[in-house]
Length: 315
Image 1 (cartoon, rainbow, N blue to C red):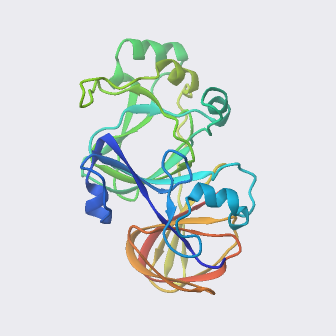
Image 2: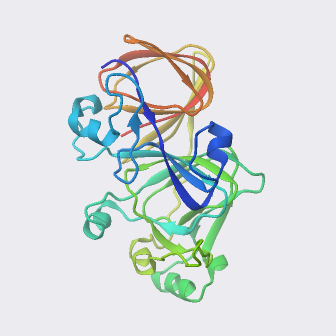
Image 3: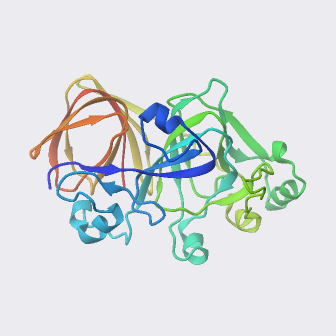
């Protein structure tokens, strides 16, 4: 198959969600508390659907299992990555994710969750929670039990274009006014450490997972600083954000003709700005802001033309 696999996202309502997925990407969202677009997902809690082409109507997870050759016959039993767009209309809970070993043992064989964020847009004074100040597990527990959240949590201001790598074990939270694209392992396991004593529509506080959070949090905190590598290629800009164990993530800013050969098991691409077209030996395909697609194994050479920006990832 020598054409993109275009995907229809699914959407998740969240207590902290808003309407930016509609306002920014013109998606048909289910409500005004839509927090997450699961754009490229084979996870059973929200699968993307192939929207056109020979596999139209397939769920991504089923296509992956039935046509492993499209994905380079990699050894993972499940489609390994998950691309989301998150609209933090309010602060998200302070949370942490387990690694593969812990999730496999305590979450019914689920993958762990290392993730990364690209800030698409944000309010002027927006920030995130990223890391903590505790030097020992005893200090970490004491600050949690004492409700000393401001002393424990590290806050960082953010701006559009920022990129953060968030390994499993990292305490983190998006705060209000941030819209990000997230690339992560295909996992839906989140341990909430703190949720600002918020109550849902029924007046209930959300479940916390203090014991598991203490088990999996990296102490002392280890921040991995990202140093993007920028290359100019025939009038286009390729930014390499991270090349890590579970995924590599890039930004392609295209303003002329961009030609490349698909040599990875598969490439995931999300158009975050602009429009253009992608040419393969199977034809010419229009792409625009809000589109998500996979370039399958064996696609060969392709060309993108137009004025657009994409976030691209692979295993």
